[in-house]
Length: 339
Image 1 (cartoon, rainbow, N blue to C red):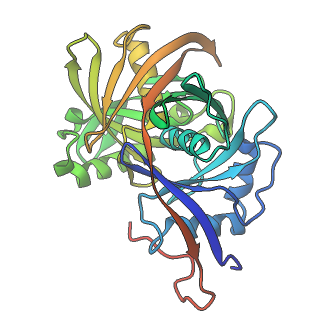
Image 2 (cartoon, helix red, strand yellow):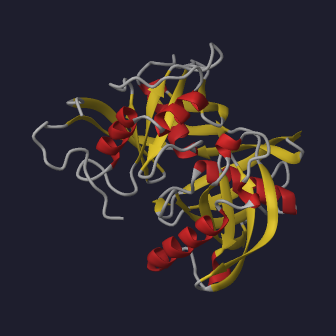
Image 3 (tube, rainbow, N blue to C red):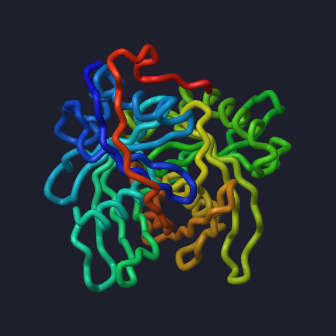
């Protein structure tokens, strides 16, 4: 391992960390971000950089981040390769929101004097568009417009240690299983944290290699990325659906935010069931009390499915700048994780 110093800028979106690496000190080959993700999965140098920045003692089991890459073409400002404890993900909404704020704050994308700056990013699942809203120098909100999202399967029975549960499966840049927490005798609260992780992992691995986890057009996007456990809180004072969720992704990682791409898949499920209609807003809370708002901005047919284009609104804040180091004599090397 010859990497000695790595500068990063860290953000959080709704409480979920995102570590940005503007200039990765390793070569990440490929003509597109999707190709670079496949390269990274099989490349020791890129994977060691991920471990260095994600694993303890520089990170933790729930750390998240991204390597900035060139865009697929001139239609986007830049690309990003997302990473977490267990590898490289196909999508990350909370990370995209943080990247849009970073791009405007650093001047990588010039601030529009209208008060709404568009940032276009290529991610492994496609091209996403963000609008950064400002009032003077202050960033007030970010809209994240994702790739087409749709329900893949409904009412799938899964055997678990808590008995049989019923889930829906939906795509929102990544594939998620959706389980009402009450169906497993739980609620989305910090008191149930360990049990939510356990059932989330069970559901993911039970379905991960099944027909329900297959992307209809691109097998690189196949596999259950996470389990979304939710509480249905009814409707708010404006007649909008209100839910609280925790997304258990990768292998037991917990999203502290309401989960950006997970919220998009949640919108797809609610649209398919008629619970969320164009003109309505999903009020989506996290396990730590942070909130996203999501809506349907368009409807279409994609890969044989009735799809929607979701938009998620949230906020991101910078938490610090870092210059991580690896001492060649350090016996722990790129680090470790305890979960």
